[in-house]
Structures are given as structure tokens and as C-alpha cells.
Length: 494
Image (spheres, rainbow, N blue to C red):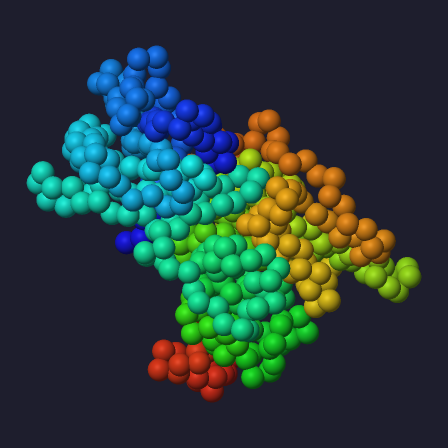
């Protein structure tokens, strides 16, 4: 099991103000956390800080706290049903180890916290450069608590930063093939970016181009999440695909191709032939540090919107709207928009990228009913113009810009949504950064697994797609001839 911690940026700012003192002394405080889990990961999601009051701690020499402060923290944690975080600062840079005093303090706290809250103590240390380290104290047997170091600590908001435990995830060694990339932002940023686990939901015309862009940026772990198969009608829009790939899963097809293209043997392509609404697809997304949304359906967008706030995982969304004019017998208009959703940024619903009504329709199966679709208005998203490859290139480029802006934040500048108007050549960036005041996703921030069960469902379309798919490893599935034979038999039986 891998352990991580995520902090909202405004919470992180308040922690820095309290813990990094002008007099150079160490300081401490407590906080609360919720848990988020996937198949391989446990995430501590920091929800709020409980700052010390006057007389609660002694900051001269080794910082210490009194029982009144700890009792107050216990009471609040019980009321809110959350875990407890013990946080202190060190006058050093980078990921911090622990002194014997640190270890003894957290060993003393761990059984008390577990006995009262039922949750493991989460310990965190802040360096003077804003770097974090973290560990969970898990009960392994009676009266025994084991320290489990977190792999990384992320700070998520208008920008994104991450501190790694280099012992668990050492920076990859880049050869000459990455000289040009590293020259743009330097070795430190390249080491941070390359170790991110990045997911792509929807490996179509946009997602396939983003996947290769991430590979050539040096990303070590790329997750391809898509249940669909390659069809003949896709060939004019899918990157690097031909007729030989028809009938195969898109996730398998691009995994195969990216493994041929990869520049470093350490790069891993994870194939997930599931919908994001299925348990396997959702767990794969929760393994990621950042997710690209390359789907146009409302249900998966809703789930990804929940992930962005409940688990504080940035989701970089994008979409294309193009239409044909019968009057001019030419393109009427084309636009593509991209933005990043996570706490302190605008959500997909407030951006107008999906409606709750359409989510309900897709969940009920109505959006697969051809008779129902015929009755939809002309401006419904299902009746809008199809995308083309050239427009996909534009959108993929804008989404990669969102990604790089988020993780690099050059000159401290971060931006929100951008929309390209193809007919005028203008890029509009005049979008609100924050959600509407009554947005329900604001109350969802860092709730973690409290919402997980409600996001998982059976997805009939995904199940049928996998059942009809061909596989490059034919020991797993039937061949094309068998698939055709079944179809012929079904025609005769009808």
C-alpha cells in the first residue's frame, strides 16, 4: 500500500504562516484529516487546522504542547469523525527525517489517537522552504505501532506542488533524449513532473495525443482509462491508428503503441479498460496525481468532478463544439475550451460542461435510446457537430498548457479557463475562476471515501464493449472470426 497526503492550498498557506517563524524557532499545531483509498493507495486529505491558543504550547528549545490543547483536538475530532494530524516545523530544507524527540512524541500520541478516533495518527513535518514530509502510525499488533512513510505530499489549489520521499521514488535518470525538455524548466522541475502519476480518461482523438505528449515529457506512470473499442468511423480522428486496430480496445491499442515509443525503460503504461463509473476505473483514477478528462459524456464528467473536490485531484477538462452550416455549405463555427477543476478553481458543472439532468438521463440509459435521442433539441450536446483531428490537436495543446502551467507556475502566474474561437482566431480567457456561491462541490472538498460508494455503478455500455472487444493477447478473448461467426448466428436465429 502506498501512502500520500494532500493539502488544499489555502490551508497550506495558513500552516506556513503559523509554523515558519521569524525567530527561527520550531512550532507545532494539530489538524484533522479524512481518508481516501484506491486499490493501491491511502490518501490523507487534510480538512482543517486546529491552531494552539495562548499557553497551549512552549516554543523555546524543543517545542511542546500541553494536555489541554490535545484534549480540545480530541473532542473536535470525535465530533467531526475525523483523523488527527500532528504537525511541527524543522529549521531545515526539503523532505524531513525525524529526531528521537519527534519519534518519541508521535509514538506517545499514536495509541491515544487510535483508541479514541479509531484512525491512525498522521504525523507531518514542514521544512523552511515549504517542503513537507509525512507518515502514518499504523497499529500492526497489540501495543505496537509502525511508522509508514508517505510517498509524497501534494498541495492543490490555483497551483500544484509536490514533495517526494526520494527514498521511495528516486528521480529518474534522464539521458540526452530529454536535453531540450529539461533546458526549458531545469532538472528540479523535470524530476518533480516526471514522477507524477497522470491519468487520461477517454483515449480518443484528444486523449491519444495527450498520452504521447506526456510520454515525451518524461512522465513515468501514465494511466489509460477507456472501455471503448476502435471503430471504422474513428480512423480519421485517432492518432496513429489504422484499420488493423479496428475492434481492439483503445486502452490496449495505445498502451501497445506507447510501449513501442517510450524513451526510458522506467516509463510504465497502465491499461484500464473500464469506465470511470466502474470500480476498477474509479480506483485507477484515484491512483493518479493529476487526471485529464477527454470525454464528452455527462456521467463520467460528474464522477470526475466529484474526484476533483472530494479527493482533491486536479482534473484538466476539455471539449470541442463544432457545427456545419447548410446555408454556406461550410463550417459554421468551432470552439475548444480547457480548464482545470479542483479546490479553489471552478468546477465542471459551474463551467457549464455538463448538466445534472443529462447525468440522470445517462445513468438511466436514455442517452443510448435512439428513439429518445431523435426527440432531443438541436442544441443538445449529442446533436452538436463532431470533432475533427485538426481541432483535437488544438484542444490537446491547450490541455497540455493547462497541465504545465499548473505544475510549473512560471513567475508565479496561474490562469484559469481558455477558449479558442477557430473562426476568429481569438483565445478567450475571461472566465470566472471560482464556483457559484451555492455550488454543492464546495462542501465536498476533502471528504474522500465518504462519497466513493455513491460513484460506483454497473455500466452496461462498458460491459458490452469489453465483451465484444478483440485482444492483442488472443488467449484472453475470442478472435475476430469467432466474433463475426456469433453475429452471423444471431442474424439467422432472429
